[in-house]
Length: 101
Image (cartoon, rainbow, N blue to C red; front, top):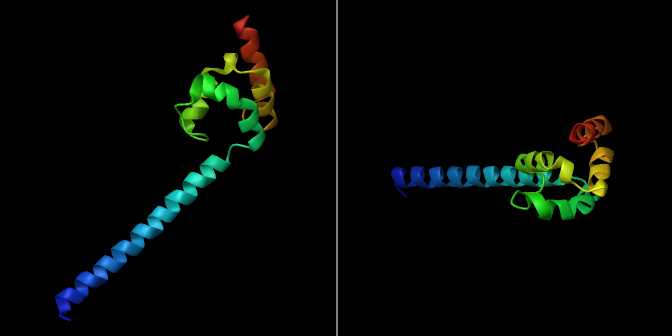
């Protein structure tokens, strides 16, 4: 094998290896983001998610922003689960409810 062909082959191997490492890292990051939302929140907020924010991926910053924007419309069950999970404080919930009156 000529020196040039050997160099091309080595470059392809390195490129392929780096691509696989990057893809694995992105997959792990995506899995960790999705896992950041507890199952109790997913179950309690499922109806609210489909009513207001289903265009956003679960666990994404866009979903969090959408749920925040629709906070006054969320079900009591969903709000309770979000408070229990530490996603929002009871003080903030009470403040928003008072300002809506």
